[in-house]
Length: 159
Image 1 (cartoon, helix red, strand yellow):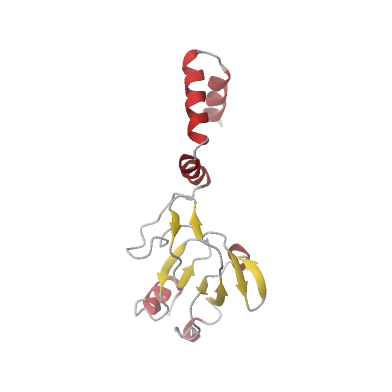
Image 2 (cartoon, one colour):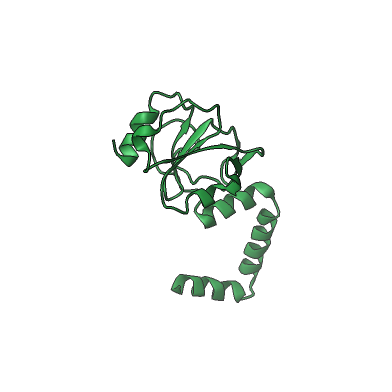
């Protein structure tokens, strides 16, 4: 709070340095890429946990995509309201047997018609499936027939 007040007070002063900084920030924020990067930093979307290699989404916040599910239209974060992990299946049904995790991991077949546009990464190819932790971060992304998927689910959510 003190830092914010000091910064706010400093920005209210009018001298050549403050005006130059204000002009520079204004110019940067008029451009899409710097604005997207700063918005990601301010909102925490630039945070990436090191959860291993793989899809660029792994370790990042799952974007709040518009989805079409068997229950109708929804958004990703509506699926997280139960504070349980969600395995979003964007591919063909039947690629993964969720039965050992029934009651702990929600498997949701879904479609997303738009692009995957992320504030920090920009456009990316959407994976066939995404395992989203209850905190909204992606624990795994890839194809449902990936041999590593059962191990990842077990590591995060038990055997």
